[in-house]
Length: 258
Image (cartoon, rainbow, N blue to C red; front, side, top):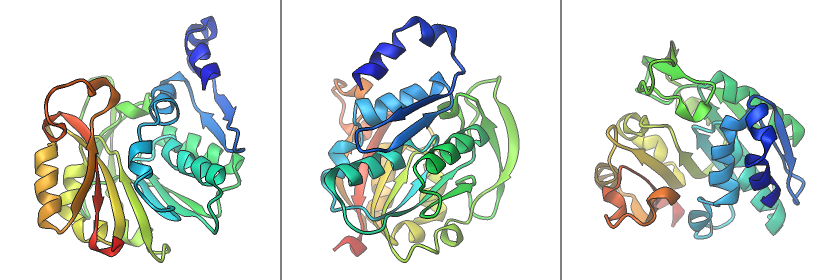
């Protein structure tokens, strides 16, 4: 990871902004990035290890759904963790995103790691059930959203994915990870029964579309138990309660985890 930090400060970082990058972890997992816009995601997941406080509270994760998979780094982090810690058995995952640029990068990573058979990649939008919605797509994939974030982004119409149908091949789901830039409001409103089919749900909320308090209320009413909530690294020193922050993540336990 120190090599990655040095690269981000180098001249090459400024001269070649759209070069493909490839890294090999000690576990053998290969990471493919489309351009330097993917590096904030790499930094969050592999350098800051932002998901580790949540994952260390869980048993081994064998099946998961990655909603808003972006360039696939969360799922590759889980695969890296599994190989490093010697998890036994088959791992299966469904990765879903609507950004066509990100999906190309994920496909490269899955092929590089020979995971295409067990990790299913879905081009789909998480939104209101059975509706076609506008999606604002950016080459800086983490800036893409159902909700317009910048005037230069291109909008296209996409039908929301049927989450129940697209994840049916998983006999059970250990974890659903959600990072969909505000669309978690539609997930909570229209897909709560499907969320409850998983043992654990890890959700990042984004104001103004979803607040931490509103998410807590909706999940508690549905029978979930909050295990841990944390702010992003840049808000770690904010004195407010985590659930009052404009963005944060919460890990929830469902009845099926007992």
